[in-house]
Image (cartoon, rainbow, N blue to C red; front, side, top):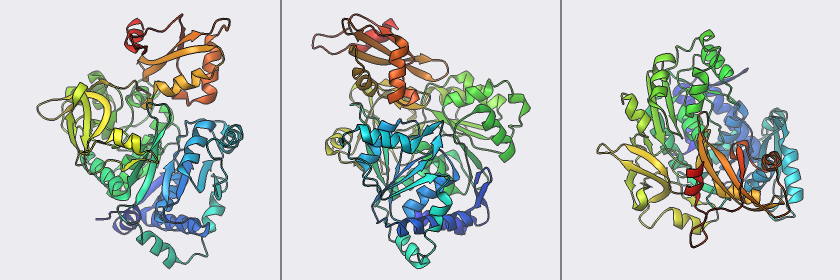
Length: 508
């Protein structure tokens, strides 16, 4: 069994050969061709001077090039640093700088934003606080510069590229996945090849993913689900990968029909959007067989509609986080109410137990190695006995099924993405006229939860909701921007001065 991602790429090329591996519009690759193209990308990175262990950042939407850049980086012995396409320039600049990336693959223009221009603007305004972009020895804009980049490795001997891939060891670092922390600054979860592949195999096995499947990946590749339970799950099972750059219900249904998609995981909002789409009956969605969801409460009625109206034979829920990817999962055959009310039972070799304050604790072979350059945060997250303290609250039933009952920390989930109020509050603190603020998540029928900001204006500094939201949109990814602003004369506090957010929730 392959224990490194380069070895898994080579194994898949031999095992699945001419079976389709990747279908992205006009770009179609068999597993054999995927292996050849990954080798070409690795050679191009070697030609650019990338050394084993050096970091390669990837700031672009789901695409064939993303897959090739990621797998090519790992085959060259590099460390992959995915960057959220929802990040603004300052957010992306921060994680790219802190990662120490030597190479950057970046979208030329995505959702109307010049990504490289946004990075340069962030660097110019940082005054060198976060390092700068001077470490980058190579920047490849995608897709325009991709073909020329891939050709630059033509002179590198195949034996050298093969040797580099073979030198990668199971315990070597494979990726650094940045996630927001409760302090408001993102943390980089560091993981090895062996652990990353362990998660991918466990997810594929639990979901019953096979070489007969065609998997529409709407989850962003920069997220652990899109990358590890998406790209790599297909790689280890032989399923065909069909990426979607930005979720659109109409386009997703077109792809399901055209590509005969069988597997479609995603947040509950994705299925609700498809079910309620005015043109749903115009598409043949009968090929769908497997859905995996989570990240928010899933109504039993939604699970039943997914099975009845979208032809899914299997609908599963799961629980995970960047530090562990997938820790629990329902199983095929579980009843609709069990799927809706729990996140399944332990998978991927994890142990699950409930600690003090009903906190969910996880221990297993596929936990992250730790946080990048942050031993204190690592020690707080993983105790001396190897248990990851998730900050989520839950309960286990007699059969080991986990129900998420709340979040010990203030984090809430908007449209499937974690939002940490402290990060939003730090941005609001920089708005002239704000004396103090508190952000909470409130229920939303479409996104699960959305942010609501409570602001105390400074005397003599009138603020308008539209101006506050505009300020946030310039500095935060869309899912982090509060949907409503409430102005108040003071925030409720306890005797020690801590803001009582539960009071704000009760008043909302």
